[in-house]
Amino acid sequence: MDTKLLFEDAAQFVTPLLAIFAVDIATGKDTEALPVLLSTSDTVSKSTARVLETGEFKAGLGETVLLHAPAGLKAERLLLVGLGKAKTLSVDDVRKGAGTAARAAKPLGLREVAIAFPEDHALSDEHVDALPALLTSRVLTEGAIVGEVDYDTYKSDRKDRSVHSLTVVAKEQDKTARAEIQQGFNEGVIIAGAQNFTRSLVNEPGNVMTPTELGKRATAMCKQNGLKCDVHSTERLHELKMGAFWAVAKGSAEPPALIVMTYEPEGGATKDAPVLGLVGKGITFDTGGISLKPAEGMEKMKYDMAGAAAMIGSMQAIAQLKPKIKVIGIVCSAENMPDGKAFKPGDVVTAMSGKAIEIVNTDAEGRLVLSDGLHYAKTLGCTHLINAATLTGACVVALGMINAGLFSNDDATCEKFQVGLKVSGEKFWRLPCTDDYRDQIKSQIADIMNTGKSRYGGATNAAMFLKEFAGEIPWIHLDIAGCAWNEEPKSWLPYGPSGIAVRSIVEWVRSYSA
Image (spheres, rainbow, N blue to C red):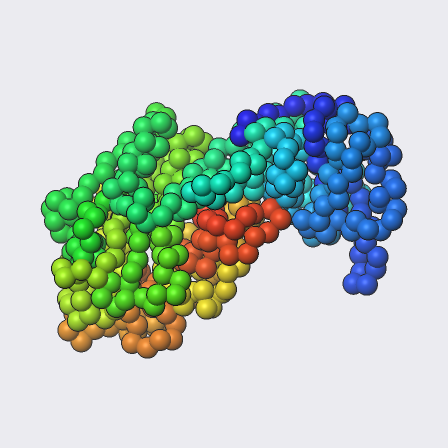
């Protein structure tokens, strides 16, 4: 999508579709909605007066109304997009509103969309701080670019309804504010591009997105963005004594891929600066292995590499945003298949760290590849770790498909991540990962088991397993199993891969930048 930012009066901009945001300023539980446009243009106000007076448009989040040939405007169509209640207005509401605007153009067959930058001073003073210029510009751009894409890649009768051009039109005269809007716009293009790249990886079927192919696409991305990238396979796993990773990989005819991406800040990292390690689970297809999954829903297991995709996408954004901190991305990719050579329940394998692991269930394979990935990150000098994985169904049972799971062994590190959620708009809920759960993964024959002793607390049991390999290093674990695939289309996001965690990981990384 071609993206542009222009500083001019949106009412005078020539476009097939101009979107204007609106909020409901009514307060009180049972009061009638009072929609107000986030625009100070008298021309826009006059052209929308009649529809606002009818009460048909209430400015609910994602609500739209389309006006043809709006009087006084040079746009062919005017789209009013609701952002919800003014008193609870957030930048994420703007992100969703922009996605709604982009998606509304598609069934109309429109290739060009313009969105008017919201003018928060159209509201009373109490709302002025709700939409800082830089962040508003960023999320608006993100929302439109991410929301526009549909993932119907392989349909033979696919109708291309993509929006080719997005223009953000800001009626801003102040030079400082203009600079902030421009910076936010630039960042939004970068982060949305990284999220969409992540989604494109997750969307691919397992017969296309093998570990080898994932390595190729990561390599191409790194080459394009000036990152160092090394992709290893079976021989290197043996050299590093990654017994847990290899146990999962050996049942497949497809070789594994250990992908290592390195970002070095310009001028090098400062002395004693943190080194951040991003570790992703890259199971490109998960049958469950010998502990075979039920047939129903197994086709979705192509998305079991969403954690790895999030790390690859995050590295793309990091390379372009250029934070002043070293970051190493590690992806442990394999297929989990029930071959004659596959690992079995009851096996004992030795991880790279030297810990012996009793295999109770071969469908608890993601934590095995991550265990070696986390330890390897430590050997490369990482001082802070974050991993992402579609790890447990138990987390989905606990949190549903609205919040993803968040676990950590360090409150300060976790708090940095949680602060960034106000910017990323992604929902993560912290769950316990304390030492009183450790008995649940103790093994009689080995150091630990790869599942808990009972079916209860499955998400925490998996986190406790990973915690063993993070050790004393500050560490965050993201269980994104319930949120990596959007099952219910929304006005701002289609069915399919969500690209969750990219925005939040990028914010976490930037929080360490000097």
